[in-house]
Image (cartoon, rainbow, N blue to C red):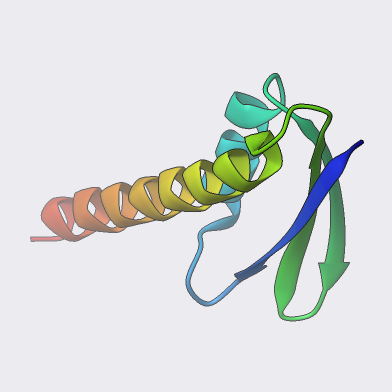
Length: 80
């Protein structure tokens, strides 16, 4: 039986490049479908393995947030 989770990433909190990078990184671990529902990027994550979709959802969100923070921190350091 397939497990499916939905992740909504708000564009004010997550950088677009970070979302795209996270999708590319985690696509090999589950089936990902991306849609747009302004102001969110909505990802549907599915896997046949029990618990996998939930884990990928959490890891992907954390990775995208980390990349967003890293990008903002680097941009702030450059502007100083």
